Amino acid sequence: MNKIKVENLSFSYTPNDLVLSNINITFDNRTTAIIGQNGAGKTTLVKLLKGLIKPISGDIQINGTSISSQSVASLAKQIGLVFQNPDDQIFKQTVLDEVMFGPLNIGINEVEAKNAAIEALSLVGMSKHENSNPYDLGLSERKLIAIASILSMNTPIIIFDEPTIAQDFISKEKIKNIIRYLQFQGKLVLTIIHDMDFVAECFERTIVLCKGSVLIDDETKKVFQNVDLLKEAHLELPHVARLSKELALKNLSLTIDDFITDWFNY
Ligand SMILES: Nc1ncnc2c1ncn2[C@@H]1O[C@H](COP(=O)(O)OP(=O)(O)OP(=O)(O)O)[C@@H](O)[C@H]1O
Image (cartoon, rainbow, N blue to C red; front, side, top):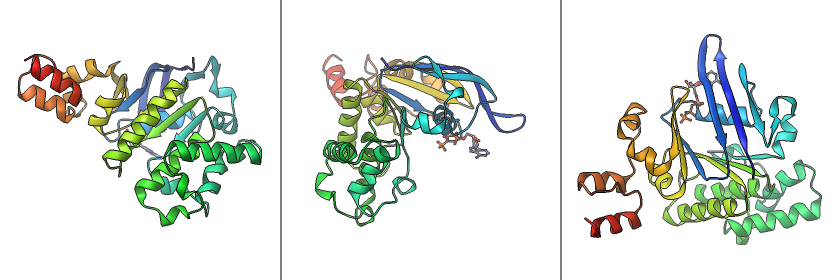
């Protein structure tokens, strides 16, 4: 099982202004959402995990080895990060070249990189666009290409930054299935996300960051039951949960399926 252990981690961009303060989290193979209002420190945490910035104190271990002794290139083979904005990631002329770039860059040979790219494009449902220019596609499709570009690297850890922005219902379902498939494959999947409906439907565990500290780290259902702490973090409940609360149902429903069951048990 893949594991990331974050111990006593603190970080500041400018002296005496801690952006992350004494973070302790062990990430495991449960699908995990990291939520928190703008500026809470989510992206900074991910940059630290990727080794793009160094902590001022504390340590991060991936599968038992501290990342402090590892290069960014070595970490690239372990952690794939899907950017929030695909246009920060995409730069090749064809979709296939784009999706092959990651594996080639970490030293995989041409034949295997092509096979990995073809498989990743199939997984995100974009095979028919293999020879298109990514910039001839819509934002939602470019986002799926960006996801495929990371999947093709076959890293044991994958981090999504806001995967559902600019996605319609069908694409969100697709992303939900991709996350579940990755978990089934034994990968460690973390997701930074503001979309509370998606959090409720997709993640087993939710971590709330607030002003650079962990405010809650629990099963997603328990997190959304903690209304006071959510208020403190300036976060809203998912729509279905709000409805079940307004209707004063006995249980707090998180998904439509839950809601239907809770409604009939009311
Ligand atoms: N390069 C930087 N230099 C200085 N301060 C920064 C830098 N990047 C982020 N910050 C500050 O660090 C804090 C945490 O930012 P971060 O981007 O990690 O938050 P976030 O939770 O990811 O927010 P968002 O949801 O808006 O992406 C914010 O106060 C932000 O202004």
